[in-house]
Amino acid sequence: MARARSSDGGGNTPSARPSSAPSGPVADATALRDALLRWFDGAKRPLPWRETADPYAVWISEIMCQQTRVDTAAPYFRRWMARFPDVAALAAASEEEVFELWQGLGYYSRARNLRRAAADIHARGGFPNTADELATLPGIGRYSAGAIASIAFRQPTPAVDGNVARVLSRVLAHGATMPSGGDATIWDAAASVATGTRPGDVNQALMELGATVCKPRAPICRDCPLADRCAAHAAGDPETYPVRPPRTAPRPETRIAFALRRSDGATLMARRSGGGLLSGLWQYPMSPPVDPNDGAGAVAAALFGQPLPGLGEAGVVEHTFSHIQMRVVAMVAEVGDASEWTPAGYDETRWVRPGELPPRSRLVAKLAEVVLG
Ligand code: SF4
Image (cartoon, rainbow, N blue to C red; front, side, top):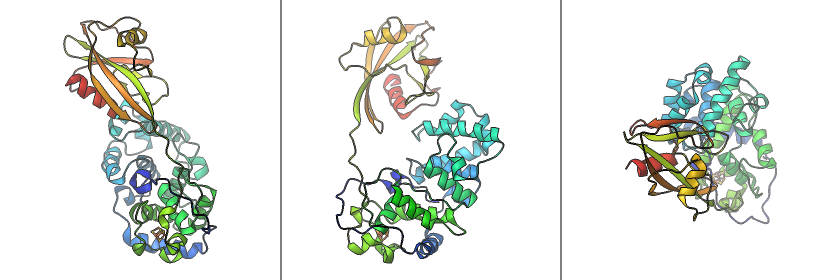
């Protein structure tokens, strides 16, 4: 199972759309499918989730590999399966336990949705076994539903991720602008080949081909099982497919994080409530976006409902989310033995000694380095 998402060779940069390229359905879907399967049987990489068709394991690996390279995801997958070996174990886990195992993978909403979906599956009394039913679970979109249904349940259904979209857009010389997940022509083409007795392997073969051979730049067409049926290769211009819309630059944002330090060295961390970017994660209380010229004292008073004593800047941390270029000014306040500080927008607080930090995002890990030195 390739499960190599956009970060594993799935991304493309904008390119000019060919004006005279042919496009259309896969001409001989059965022959293309058979060529893919022959290649996949000999070329697939050994990955831990390929040792099972257990729907739970397939689901975990599919979600884990979104936005994450397979070689990064593999050790996480092993640790996860050892700690939460089935739906019941995951459904019974706390959000903090789940975040702890997810720490470092980013996009924590994936972990949160895994736990929610596990509770849902547990309540239903069994794993949904069709793409339509799977797509009703939190965090499972059209791609993931198709991948799980085809791999775990052999349902003949397509699964189009960035890699699959790239391969098929080149085979068809289909130059439409490609949103993530592909367009209707690509989904139709994928559906025409994800058939027969091994639809899951067909989908995985397309993913694997995109990750290892039909790369965004310099595809290795001489090693490709589809070379003699690929329109883009025949035209000599595979890299012009697919066309992606230009990326919009992440918007700049400034926030202020406050590390309240007690005389025993413990700092106050708080768990963000609501459904935002870092909700459910422990962090130093952080302001909403502020004007870079706003004074930290006024921001602190608004966040805590009172001024912070001994406020001083510890440093500045930069962190890029997919859509936000965040600049966080880390402030430290020495609060003696005081313990009651409840920032607005957080549902729980905890005094934490250095070395006992709870599961945290990369941004908070950077802030901790600045604050704790
Ligand atoms: S022949 Fe080249 S461009 Fe076409 S699918 Fe294979 S690797 Fe991609």
